[in-house]
Length: 219
Image 1: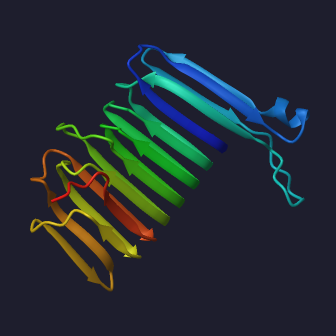
Image 2: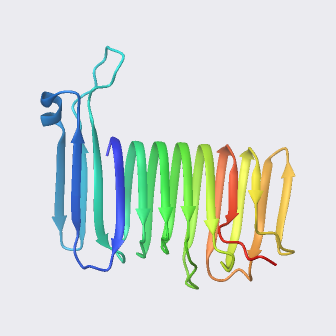
Image 3: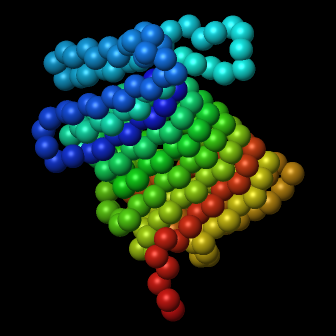
């Protein structure tokens, strides 16, 4: 998608549902926004075709498209690309999950899948309301922006986070988690609650990283 939103929800139902909302400044523009859905055994692809942007003028009147997509939670997301806007992925458990965002905000919630996330400019939030002892990984790269990772107190994972030019805030303090600050930025590396089988890697080139204990245990 070029401009708008893509919201993907994992479901226990063995079917796929797609809703697309098109918006534009004129009916002529609206009609020129095309949505192409192609299917073949085992896969579905959805792409948006926008009319050429005007070379002159203060506003881009090409329009936006907001997608709401419900898929089986065990499906893999081979490619999710959005130039500008908002991405939300919720409840996915497939083998892989790839998402790319040019500018805007990206949210990944309760996704126990091997996630590969990237943002050129914007903010990232990865959140888990509960924790499951299963093998998966989250690798996220933000070029310009901030990253928040919300994890339950009992989450067990290997953590590697680096803010090359920014600050690091980490609620998970333990002897097995090493923190370092240098001219190359701030870095956190270690095992939380024994490490488990999960790996979380977060890198922000320009911006801050926040590793948050979402429901801290009062000791």
